[in-house]
Length: 389
Ligand code: TRP
Image: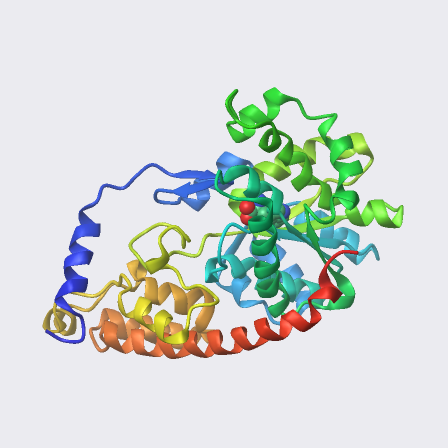
């Protein structure tokens, strides 16, 4: 046996045998094999075309890795927001996080991209912390717990390097005053039957969560509300949040606001077979607060496209397209197209084995974590500059 342990291979056999489940994508559940083209159709969004990417490139210089590798793949009205921008009308950015536990690499994907957009377009950013949403959804959460997770997760947001002059973190609990008047105006136009159909609420759902979509809609219009002008808003987020924006877009004109535009990303796969990175499976996700050696162990246990033995792999090669390690290089940790192409070729040719890739990825992830954790500690000292006043 080569560098792959017997144990790991048993695990691989087990997961390979599992049936493929149906695709489910809602703001609260993502499971099954995700077909992104189908999602574009189902949600009625637009694919990010080469022309649009070219247009973005004109403003941002080199295409960001997440665009280059199509991690962001879909949008609504991005072309329109660029028309506005090119006509001299700036837009505000809006994204957020539901603080239900520690932050992992999957969460920070859209944040990294949002930071890039903030720099490239000199845009204000509203970052919503839906501490209220998580309080409502988790029976065991107290308000104190929600607030403490909000603060803790905010450190990860701040560690991304957003500009404190242009960034406001909105805690729903703490900053409700900024949102309430807008949320009320939104809520007046959204019926129970609409949110029931869009979010699947039932008679047994608590009334807080039924109203909550109005709270998540509100930051789309905060910049307009605060400046007294109609300011376009662009939301970079994973595509599971789209139902919120469908509802918000419907009612925006009724309130005299532009419809919020979106740019959607895929889910970062976990380190197991299939599925997104999910905090409910801690062994398959790398938390930003994981000690580097813990993250390294998770990588060593990751699902790959390797063969059961080193001999077979040398003889027949591996399959990078089912390999989580390859995904991590592709989406996050290897910027060079040439190196990616080499990795792919060497894997398929059996010139490298899984242990080689895991070792390289582990080094990159550990370096990232060490740096992130330093910035995260420094964030405590500057957090006040980021929280909405
Ligand atoms: N509901 C989101 C979550 O559970 C948090 C969120 C609020 C959000 N506003 C957002 C995410 C805007 C993306 C964009 O994670």
